[in-house]
Image (cartoon, rainbow, N blue to C red; front, side, top):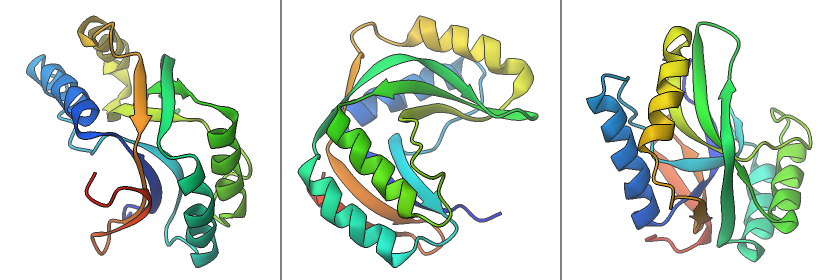
Amino acid sequence: MASPDNILLHLPEKEEQQVRALFAQLAERGFPVQNQTPHITVTFSPQMAEQVTARAAKLLPAVIPAQFRRVGTVVFGTKRKQTVAWLLETDEEVEAAAREISSINPDGRGKRWIPHLTVGLRLPREIVPDYIRALDELTSPHLKELTAERAALWKPRIQELTVLAGEEGS
């Protein structure tokens, strides 16, 4: 299965590097290497519909940059491979924009949005408890807030990034 198109929120370089350093520390402990760019997904689709991108380009500039607070760790998935993520909270304006964008995506999940940042992608289910323990040990207690400084549409199949809000070079 090809990776889907995504409307993503990107972190500033310093925060991205903090998350990547955490990925490296987890890999040093023998856990699967995490190569993904740290991000917060607004919505995704096999091929993002133009009306979704257009609406995102209208709504997101008003709420970017946005602050997110880490409020927990969650596990997504019920099968052999699972995803570990930081559960995030943000303000109502950001949530409302994300829910509206998701609701008009024909491949979306309606008005539902669970803000999160994936820190362990496609992990074998049997290592998830140890992964979460290591994540808790290694995560700085000072890393409580994250900033979304840019919103973009990422089309992995053609390697195309279109900035929708925030700075192009961020």
